Length: 345
Image (tube, rainbow, N blue to C red):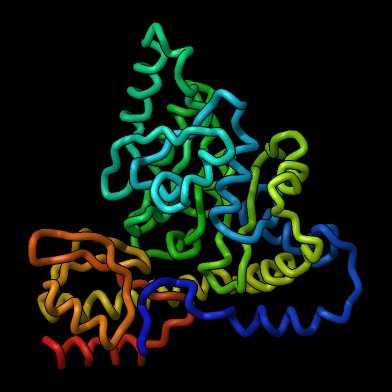
């Protein structure tokens, strides 16, 4: 069955599998001290134009979010997120499990507005009883957002200015970062993110790797003993090389960016095909995630022949679904999906 359910249904890019196979017999130290991790870190620092960055490799997005946020915050602090943020909606309370509250803000197409963040902070400190509340200790955003939308460079600069004014670290979840960076019309680069954020991660799980996220603290900004935080969360691999080998391959000859661009091109073919067929979109996403409004009856017929994600009800007779392309999506798959659409319409 055709699947546009998510961007991690496939295994890994062949170049990563070859690298894992070729390097497997080579004995190396454990816990990320191997030569492959060190090489990958240097390549990531160069791509970020942040040669003094601290780089760590973790296995998955929820794990990365939890470890980073827990390390950034003191015991009385919470993290500010758009109400639709992944840490607020789709991580089973992983942040709260560490004793930190997620403090929600309104969302606009999945994004947080700098003015809303500033207002929240002003209102918090203006409240005479704020010592009885969880203190805002960090700011979480994702790029792309849960709705496949992107922050502009000006929006990131505005958030950075508010974080500077209130002395809060800005954390960017980059689980799908490659797809954001390579989207049409995006004016944000990887060096921009390194310059404007205190910490971010480069997603591998959804962008060509078997698993893995590269956590980057620009300007040698990692919290003290961050590696011990990783260990305490059970997140440190003895065979850390498994992540280093993959990111070393992803950041060789621009592979991470070229396969991300492929997903965007396939999403473009899908989007244009659906527009030609009169499909309504829930919002305009420039990334690999497309959100469309379907008649419930048609949705049920389509689900019998292709996989996609149910996103939520739209009205009494329509629903919003997500269609996602990936680094591995072939144009023939997109065309076959459109043929199914035509046959069922």
